[in-house]
Every structure is written in structure tokens, then in C-alpha cells.
Image (cartoon, helix red, strand yellow):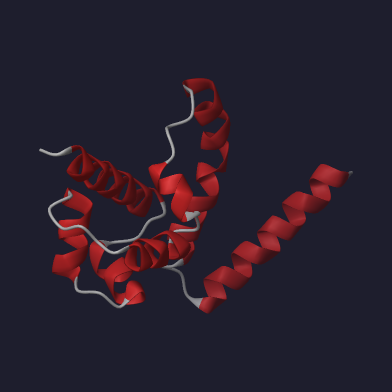
Length: 119
């Protein structure tokens, strides 16, 4: 494997990890990025070299900068701090499955929790 191929494999692994962390299925992300599910799967496995415009679209949907996809991983200490915000992702994933009425109830509950924390 050439060095240039390694970067695509690393980017694909990072994309897959980020997609799962953000709660997207292959189908959901491919639909939002307007690419085929098969093509996205190839990108994640590093068997296809996506153009930067495609990678930029995918990273924008996943909420990161394209540079961050290729940036070296943060030290373990920094990742531990980031994991606190993983609840944001988990909550967003759960919210996708709720009805508007259920979301309204959750909103009211969160407002009450916030009031309690201020007191």
C-alpha cells in the first residue's frame, strides 16, 4: 500500500468512527451527502479515494472541519474531557426517535432541571 493510500484508509476509519459517534447510519449519512450508500461504504473502508469536496461535505454534516479528519488524534487526557460532550450526541440520537409531544415533555423537564440547578 502506498503512503497516499494510507491517508485515505485513516480518513475512512475516522469518518466511520465519527459517523457512529454522531448516531448516523450509513444510509442516513449517504442520503444527506447525496452519495450512494455503497460509495460511502468504500470511502469508510479506504477502498475508494473520495475527492476533497465529498470529504468536506461529509465532515460538514458530521460537524467537524475537514482538517480535523486528517489531524493527529488528541492525547488520552484531552479525549477524556471530550467524552463529557458525548451525551450531546447520545441525546440527539434519542431525540430522533421521539414524537413532537415527547420532545415537548423532555423540553419541559430540562427547563425544570435548569431552574433547580440555578437555585
